[in-house]
Image (tube, rainbow, N blue to C red; front, side):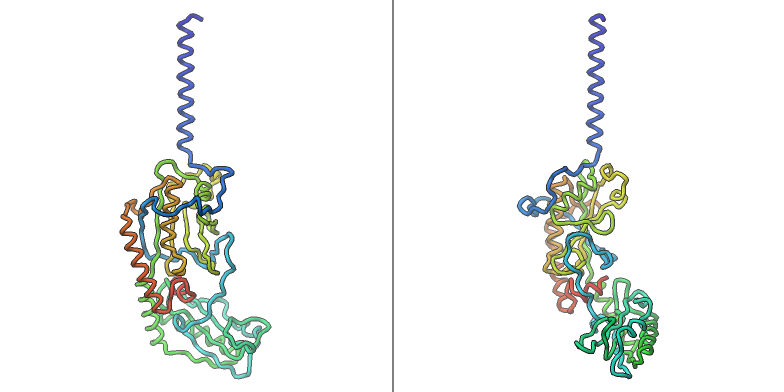
Length: 356
């Protein structure tokens, strides 16, 4: 091989090596960022300062509930709270007096209607326990000296209307007849009017807030998101692509929800799934004020933006100033005060039922 041929061969080899290296580099850059094997994903307070990092932006809207009780998140949660009983504040209640001294719980259970809803509203029957005197859902092995039937006045589907009230009367009357009881219904016109007033109040004092975190450059894999969110205490939810920050008090309702593309979470190879954004959300009336949900959402967004190289924006990709967020926080305090004054404190059983 003459010197010229050798020189051309060496040059060609160098060019080929450069092209291969370039292809490897660009391929790696285009892959979603992955979780680091062996890195501790447990919450680390000392390693996760949550303030003064990135100025987050926020979008607030009233929307359907983010988390139903049927969708209890997985992970180390407290035991679920007992479901609250009927409450005259948010329910139509019809008392049932028995012809005899008491009725067995088995008979009451057999008399219940097959569905526990009237239209879009929850329907319930409670009995007064012969031994304890407490009102409770009928249970086998107990006896009851009286009953009461109820239907919720309003929820996020709207106010109880005349058709739903009439359906309530039919279901409650059938139960009363089955247990040999006399039922006393309140005036429909008054209860429907009360339902509309409660619905109007709820509609004017509902709030669900969200922050969108977008990747600045390289996309994230689901594992990358999970690893960083876990450091803040988030655990996987039941729905793929959803994580939740469990509440400290006994409840299935999380403080915050973190959601991303469900298709990415269900991908055959999640490591190759590319996420370009995620959303942090809080359902304000569902979470106790003492949990500081809005402040914790801002702190979590700041930390994740710093750790994952993201930028926080509203739904339209627009940034808002920190003083605007401070103003929203002040408005939320006023909202909490109003809910407290109405005996519908955020996170209370009554509020959670009304705003659901």
